[in-house]
Length: 133
Image (cartoon, rainbow, N blue to C red; front, side, top):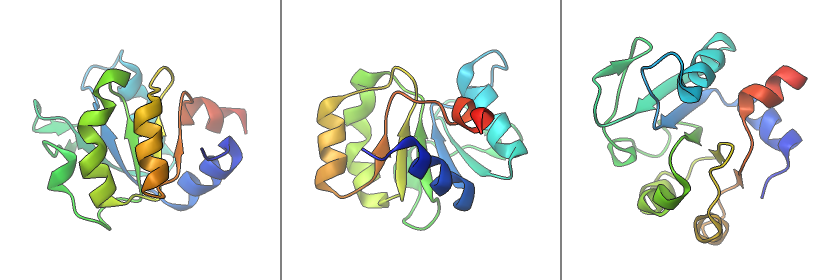
């Protein structure tokens, strides 16, 4: 697992992020985090099969709609039990970081990332960490 300081340095230098589970509802944590990241200069790619657009950005239906190089990192706003559903697409994308939000923890998923040599951080919010600095 990547250390928080390393993860923060990475996202500040690598601004293209796919946000899996991004909600269009303003009261949802995913929406607040995405908006914050945009304010910090990040280019977001909403990943949500239900909506055409969120925060003025076109949605992709699934991670497999992206190709390696389209994004720098992935921010996961999904139930921990659903993480394994995304493992193959993430391994194919080979992002520089997979960020799993607070409460999004799955040891089997983490092992998959380790085996694929994909850095990750889990149970942490980038917005909260950015605001601390």
